[in-house]
Structures are given as C-alpha cells and as structure tokens.
Amino acid sequence: MAPSPTRTDFLPVVLGGDIGAYALCREFHEAYGVRPVIMSTGFIGAIAHSKILSTHTVPALTREELISGLARIAAERPGVTLLLVANTDPLIELLEEVHDELPEQVVCPLPPRAAFDAVCDKGVFTRLCGEHGLDTPRTEVVRLAGNERIAPSELPFPVIAKPAVSAGYYPTLMKGFKKVYYMTAQEQLDELWRNLRASGYSGDFLVQELISGDDTYMDSLTLYIGRDGGARLLGAAQVLLEDHAPAMLGNPVAMVIREKPELWERAAALLSEAGYRGFANFDIKRDPVTGRELFLDCNPRIGRNSYYNVAGGVNPMEVLVRDVIDGEKDETRIADDEALYTLVPVSLLRRYVREEALLAEVDDLVARGRVFDPQRYDRDRGLRRIIDVELTEKNHIRKFAQYYPKPTDTSF
Image (tube, rainbow, N blue to C red; front, side, top):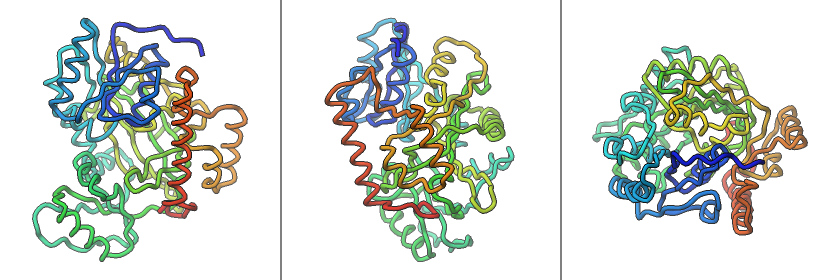
C-alpha cells in the first residue's frame, strides 16, 4: 500500500484503549497519513506497541481529566484543529455532557442531545422504528427505580432482558452483571430485579421476545448522517460470530459485507428526522422462521467493528473529515465490496458457521485474499505487535471454549 498524503491541518484524538479505538486510528492513518493521539487510562498491547499513533495516558476518563488532557495536547499543537472521536457508550455520554466545555481548538462531532437521548433509550427507539416501518421485537419496559413490586412478564419464555440505556448501565456492568440476559422462567427475572436494585441500579430494563437463530442471523448497519441531514455513508454486514464472554456478549468478531437498500433508506430517514447527525450503528436480527428483520437497538457511535466498512470499500474517517473538517457535501458512499472482516482466526470461525453456503462464501473470500483484520496492518508491523495480536487470537480461542464451546440455535 502506498503511503497516504499527510494532513497537517487537523489531528485526530481518539478516546479509548481497545481494538475499536485502534481501528479508528488505523482508519485515520490509512486515509491521511496522520498519527492520531489516543487517550485512555490504559491500552491493549496492539496500541501500546503501535507505530502509527501516540498514546496519552490519563488517570481516569472523567470530565476534568478529559478537558485538561485535551488542553495539554492543544497547547503542544497551536493552530491545529483537534478532531475528537470516541466509540463506547460511556465515552459518548461523557462527550455529550462536556461538549460546551471543550477547548476552542477541539472539534467534536456529536448528535444533538435530544436526538442522542431518543435513539439511546430503547423504549423511545422502538416507537421511532414503528413510525418508519422498521420491525422490532415485542418489548416490555421494567422500571427499577423505587421499590414497587414489578409485575410478571406477559411475554412467553424464554425472553431477553437488557438495560434500556446502555451508557448509564456501565458502572453496573463493571460490578459483574451482564450486557444481555437469557431468561427461561419468571423466577430468574425476579431474582435479576432484586439483584439490580440491591446493587443501586435504578434505570429501566427491557424484557423482549427471544428471536431464535444463531449468531449468523445477526446483521449490522452503519450510517453517517451529515450536518445537512443527508446520508453520507451506508454500510452493512452479516455477523458470522459474536463474542460470548459475559461483559462482551453480542460484540461481533467476524462479519461478511452485505447490502441492505430498503433498511438503509428507512434507518437514514429515522435518524435524519430525529435530528440525528454523525455515526450510528444498528443491531438487527433476522427471524429464521418468519424472515422478519427486527431492529434491536441503535448505538450512537460508529461501533467497535467500524473497520468492516473499510473492508467494504469506504473508509468512514474519510467521510467524517470531509463533512466536519472540509465542509464538503458529498454523495452517499456505499460500503459494498465483497469481504470477510474478522478479529478471530478463520480456523475458529469455521467451527461455528454451520450453513454450507455461508461457509463456502467464507472459504471463497479467504481464497481470493479478501480478508480484513484491523489488528494486522502492514504499515504497523513489529515483533511485539505481532506477539500481541497472536496472544489476542489465542485468548479468543480460550474464551470460546469456556463460554460458547459450540453453536446453538439461539446463540445462548
């Protein structure tokens, strides 16, 4: 790959220390030759030993530490615009709170607060989907605030239980609770409600009908809505395998590129009419019995697996920079190149893809060299990084053996 021309008029600052943050740094580096600054309390080895970025360690990602850290970076680079991006729910929530306090040098593209709240609250999101012809699972909202008795669920078991707003749930998740619960009886729900209240959690929870199907029945949509409300990026992928560790449950680790014209159009209209701007990522599950495509939620960020859009032919950081730095009004770009995106070894992936046609597609993409892993970057090679990536892959093998030794018809 030939070196990209270097931009010196802006500097990306990426918040976070995981593979999703590294992918954003790589996207900026591929597109513009810049070395982003990545800010966090700690970093995975693939970041700590990277040559395409510089790290800025802070004691905590709090309001005070974030603002002071950005001020120090800005002071070192006078006249350079800092383009601030993040890719986890708690960090996006933090940026929404401190947006007006950021140094003048910082550009931080975020959706307006009202639109952010609308898509993050899964109850409101369900209503918005209905208004735009997008199907959603049957859902009950459980209010955990207070101590009133919680009525039994009227949905048939098994059901799924998850927080209505992910960002506010993060501290509870760190106490050992799960992102998503698979419940087979009312007694399990009752125990969960007691434990959540005892932990101090007072947010809303959702109980949803279980949509059957293994990981390969999950889809992802990625959109970027420009400042004028028009869609600038449309991407989609079919999930092949998700992470099954309790704190990471539901995060895709392997995907193939797909086209979703009708869903793209309706999802873009939902976001635009809600006043939403910037990146959004939708989780969808296809019902193997009815064929329904059900929207599960909307994440107010590009998503941990943003690099699948690069695999599909569109670098999303180019789309972002063209909109918020260059002020250009571009045509919609569609990430539709055939490709396999994976964070795990293909040998592991083959153990879990049960559909013959889908497995044949994977094998064909591998044979044609259409495999993309954001961790493996030729312009960021080094012995320690190679070791880090290989250790990460071995850890995936260990985790699947522990938490999901073989595929199931429900993915639980």
